[in-house]
Structures are given as structure tokens and as C-alpha cells.
Image (cartoon, rainbow, N blue to C red; front, side):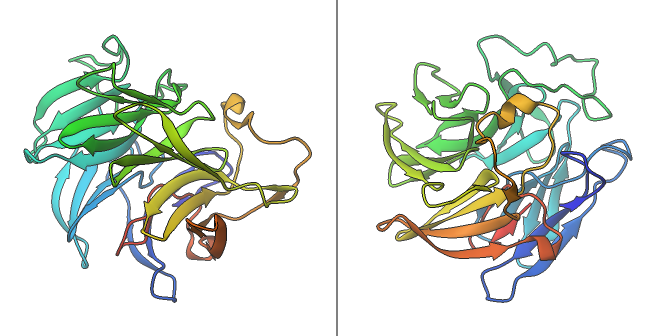
Amino acid sequence: MRELGDGWYGYGAGVIASIGSGDPRVAHTYVSGTDVRNPDDPMLFKCATQRGDLLYATTETEVIVYRLPDFEILHHLSHRWFNDVHHVLPTSAGSLLVASSGAESVLELDLDGELLGVYPAGDEPSPAIDEDRDLRFGVNLKPHAIHPNHLFLVGDEPWVTRFERRDAVSLVDRRRRIAIERQRVHDGHVVDGQVWFTTVDGAVVVGDPETGHIVDTFDLNESRQAVIPGWCRGLLVGQDHFWVGFSRIRQTAVRSRLSWLRTGLTTSLPTRVERWDRSTRTMDESIDLEPLGVNAVFSILKGVSCCT
């Protein structure tokens, strides 16, 4: 994202960076049209999903389906209940699940943008969902009470992470839940039957969707001295390593979200991705993204490498 001014989300373009070739570069940039947002509203890519040569990307008010490697736009859809969209996930039925954080809901749509269903993130439907209300244009619904932000499938069962609830729940059976009580949660990637999450304070947490228990935690801050590590979000898990993203800490209107920061820290690390060895639990590579104009990381994808 290109940053505009000093605001937490004062961004003016979405950026996809390629970092895996040893020569980091900007692979694609995108700016939303005023048909889906006000000109002064923020513009950035949020979390994305890759399926083969298809990239399912999100902005605050859109879902865009690209064909790689040329970033050919195959589908573009927006809905009046898209507000602070955080993630999109294709289903085996061919529909799309969309986490609309501002609407406190997961919306299911077809590729033409027709609404197929609404899954409230909480126990009751969100009051923001109104047939006559368009949430895309200048509507600020923050702070969010629940903030659904990342989708994943356990088999064909859809789950969503809930940032403010510090958990992940099944959308079809709320009794199925993984509590990540360490801190607020991002991501949610199923690897060998377990689900890998990031927490904003710099941890990678592994949960079991069948038992709901946490089975492992990687604390990425144990070896850091007197630095602000960044907002931890974005994860790609491999067999021997995982890549994790950190966004430089800047001001936020909701100061309580930064309560996990230790006092007395003065040095802020740049926006970057790090590679960690799963067996030794040590970092062996770090790539600074700020020279590319990337100021926040939301997704790390194989082949695409970094989507922000």
C-alpha cells in the first residue's frame, strides 16, 4: 500500500510485490474506482487467497479475481454490504465467502456478485446489515465489536477468525471453536489438519479444530531486544519453514489495540517479511518491503509472494 499522510489507514493504492526471486519488485498495483468508494476513502489490498493460477484479492469494498501471472481481471464484484472487507475464500461449490469486517458478517456470493447468504460473526445479525443501506461510501463502522477477518475451510466446513474475540469459529456450528487467547488474531491456514494463526503481538499459534486446543506456539519476539517488532499479520507455512509478515507500527485511533506493546521501546522495525525455521525456531531471512512502497502486509502467497 502507498501511504497518504500519517493516518493508520491513509493508503492510496494496493500493491502486490514479488519477493521470491532474489530481486524484490512491484508486480502489480491497483486503485479502486469511485463507483465502489468515495475518493477520500482508503485504498488498499487486504487478505487474498490463491488457487492455482487464480488470485482472489480484496480491497475495502471489492473482490477481484485475477489470472496469474499477468494479473488479468476475470471477475470484479462489489456489494453494498462490503465494508472493510478483509478476506475472500472460494468454496468447492463455486461461490465466494467474503469477510466484511465492518458489517460484522461473512457474505456468500456467486461470481456475478449475487448474494447467496449471510453468516453473522456473532450470535445475532449485525445491525449494520440493512436492505436500504450502502456501507461502501464513507461509512465508518469502527470500532468493530467482533471484526471477522480471515476465512478457512476444515474439509468443506467454513470457519472465520474473529479478531476482537481472539478465536476462530465454524460458521455452521458455533460450538466448534479454537480460542487464541494470547492476543488478537489474524490468518488461519489449514496445514496437515491443524490451523496456523498469527497474533498481532508477534506469535504464530497452531490449533486443533477437532479439540479446539492450542497445540503449539512460536513466540517470534523472544530474541528481540528493545525494538517494536511491528503488527504481525500474513503467514505462509511450508514443510520446513514459515514466512510471516510484520507491518511497521503507526498511530491508530483505537489505542487499546496496541496495549500489548512493551513500554520504553523506541526503535520501530520496518514493514517486512521474515522466514523462520520450524525446527530450530529461529529466523534465517528478513526482507524489507518499504523500498517497494509497501507499508503494510496482509497476505504472503506462494508464487505471488506478498500481497498488501
